[in-house]
Amino acid sequence: QVQLVESGGGLVQPGGSLRLSCAASGIIFNIYAMNWYRQVPGKQREFIAGIAKDGSTNYAESVKGRFTISRDNVKIMVYLQMNSLKPDDTAVYYCNTKVFALDYWGQGTQVTVSS
Picture 1 (cartoon, rainbow, N blue to C red):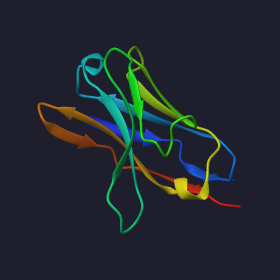
Picture 2: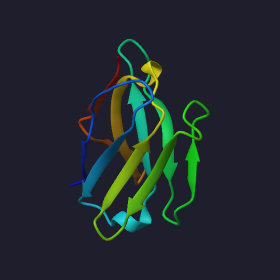
Picture 3: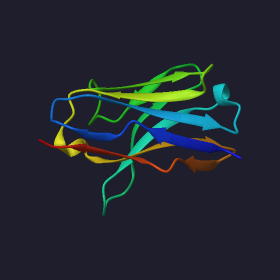
């Protein structure tokens, strides 16, 4: 059973930083791509960052240069370092992976950027 558990969200001022963590279990972690998405109430969940099994990364234009995704295949964790945060980054952030064409999601962690 695949389980993803996010942590690290919170309230931060504009320009600040946060690091989100996602603990994975129930999968052979190092062979799957891992992703971060976010969702604002009333809007579709949007992809923001992904990291492949070889460590290659891709980002949404809205976060490129500010966010960094990384993974630790020993600790079975994926991270999202978020810098230069803006109020528009306020959302619930979700960890995601796809196993045999099925999407798995964590419960989400709230990030609020406000002064």
